[in-house]
Length: 249
Ligand code: MG
Ligand code: MG
Image 1 (tube, rainbow, N blue to C red):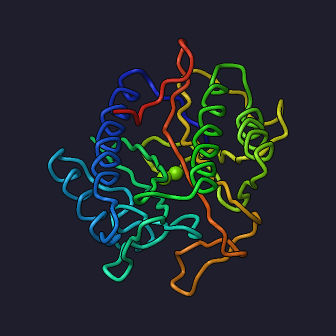
Image 2: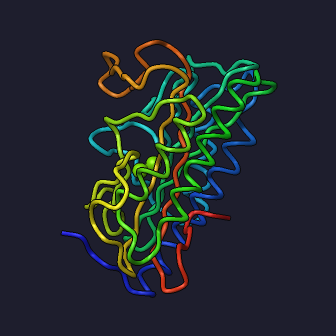
């Protein structure tokens, strides 16, 4: 079932989104050479606690942290650890969410650790641009396929590939609601968007092959060829005035 949210409900999701944006800012600042991915999780927990929010990641199917920390060839779902030390030249995807009064927000970004090579920076820039191209499609009357086609078109024109096994999602009183939001087309197909629908759009873009592999911990998803991957996500509402991104500061 696809639910449409009222203005009041979207207002609560916006509050949750502001907590997520603050978590991102604090995590970005903490993501420096020598920090561990567990340090990133601590910073995010501190924001959750101070804002009186709850985490929608902690305990999700047993996930042990409030953020997913996914360095370099890890696409998504990396588990924070004091044994994963960030190094100059790495990239790190940070995915987290928050709940306020039962309403969820979810967002992700990829950050450079110190100075990074030009190709890694291009991967980050293209992935973020593909998210914003998708957000432009979050308008009444457009279809889910238009969102996916926007991501896929931009990423593939840049010579990168789009992960197909993991997709975006509806979001509201649960983190993952219907519909699924693929990062590929075809345009003009799929559910027609209506005011009040809220989606988490989250392109995962790889430098090499789109193929993925899950490690033995049951969580960590990596690129099959070991090349790097970037991930950006926002929670976006369809409003009468067009897309409203709820996970901005
Ligand atoms: Mg998500
Ligand atoms: Mg997420």
